[in-house]
Length: 146
Image 1 (tube, rainbow, N blue to C red):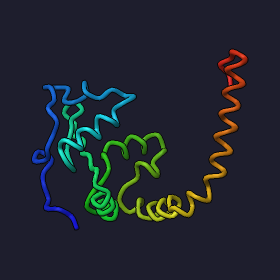
Image 2 (image 1 turned 135 degrees about the horizontal axis):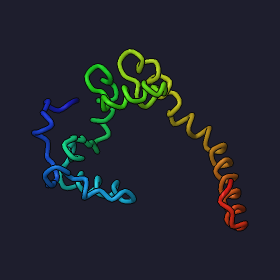
Image 3 (image 1 turned 30 degrees about the vertical axis):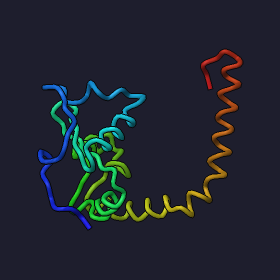
Image 4 (image 1 turned 45 degrees about the vertical axis):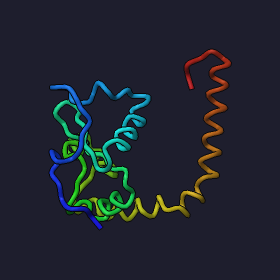
């Protein structure tokens, strides 16, 4: 069951700086750890800012499932992604919204089911091992080409 609606400004937020928000607190290699710490401190959902752009974060899997079920009718992704990728003729799985999203959602749900992932794992492991061997060979040869 969804909690009562709140505005972004009502969500808890880590302290940031004027103009840059929380950008200075996010180190690329460890930003996921920072987001997890904020979730532990602030609860879920919470909001942080990249400049003036608010970014909401959920760590409650039930809430995430409810939101995904109600996409795109009640919730949508970051709006600019769709328009930018449409310009490049790449609008698809990670950007499409509205009616175009619904058939893709069914496809994604089937593809990411536990049974499909378990069945694909041996293939993924084999491909990863081939890539690792290729990189080792290149590293031994002192070359940067693959």
